Image (cartoon, rainbow, N blue to C red; front, side, top):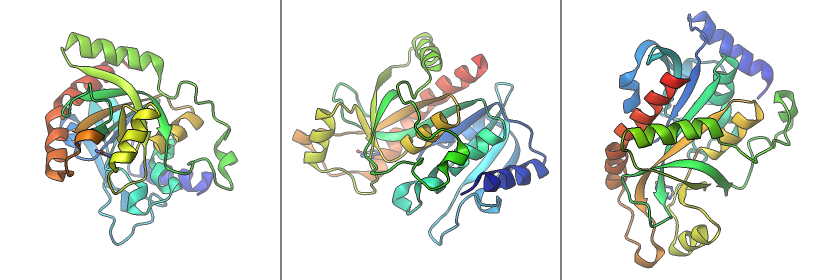
Length: 271
Ligand code: HPA
């Protein structure tokens, strides 16, 4: 991945008539409904965008969607790439760099996660206030990473404090329970063992998932203020662990999604 690759991706998108989006959004697993709130002007398959992703046989890659939401120009990644699909850190974070290069000024991320903090219930949502990277690598550890900016990126406040406060205020006004906590990222795709859930609790995680941290690290490198919300899809109690129920995970994501949409739509109005 080079800076020129990014510029070529951006050049292609501009040639399709895309304006500068103000806000970039990444929609997580089972969280695609927000797209229906958008006045869509362009939809572009990831696989059509030069360099966007090395299309693999398994990749049923998603779309980059452009349009307006609450009167603001937005670009949405409907579908993200995960390490567990065999993509590397550069591929997982490529879209973030492209959306920034297109001119996005804010990044709003969502994901599905398991609740480690047992005061939180499945079907509720959590504002990510901090994270623990357990993915065994960094999206800034590659040979020409310095071309893209400082690599010794400060992570003292990776999630934008002011936008977080805005989201908390919106939640309060709309009677939405918005927990706040620490998200631990793992590679997956297997779920965690009882011992791993215990460990995650001990190290201070409130939720665990398989995404988001690489995107947030890159956003911090390139100066793209970001926020992230987890939809809690299952309760990870090591002392009472039930086998994972994937349909239930999707059902819980669907249950909480309207709240996520409200929070992000109202935030976008304020940006
Ligand atoms: N672990 C990891 N990732 C997840 C989980 C979980 O329990 N739930 C949803 N994504």
